[in-house]
Length: 260
Image (cartoon, rainbow, N blue to C red):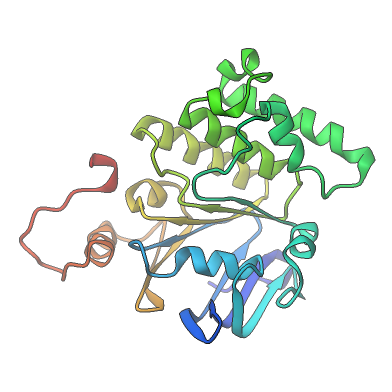
């Protein structure tokens, strides 16, 4: 169902993204609405990260239009795009190892007016401690001393400290235990319920489908398949075949990413 204009946070219209003259993904079109989780699924190398980099203008949008809340953002600097309201939790988290938990979160608030930074950092630190109580005694530690799950919560808090309209996550489940992945995606569902628009690029399709409102599978540079929360169970089999490169009906045993 098309998203009404006031509720549409992100719009891609016939967008292709690449590096130099090389096209990696697209052209394709998609939308993310307020309070919605849209997942981009697919194996490594299909262009998920490149598409996200295109949103942030860290890769070239070679054709089409990217709009944030109705305003075209293609061609603007990455810093300008961030100030307009897109925050990303990058693959691998990319915290500053020698900085404390609090200081890492504070870097996410730098795009806010000075008077708003401290309240935003305090609020996200409290939220992170609610999600992961162990952080209450570790907020002064260097991030390099944290576990992978703790680092991912800090990276999420850092992104949220910028008060984004759109939260983008690139492979958030990478390297995390299944229980931590489940908890992380539950937190995303909570944020969406509060009205945040969320775009997730993920290879772990079984975890993503549990919370996604809609999901697109990328293959061959475009959207090969689309599903939603109320879609039939058979859709997961189709997605598994696309992600793992098998044809539907292959007799080879199938294993979800969480089970590996």
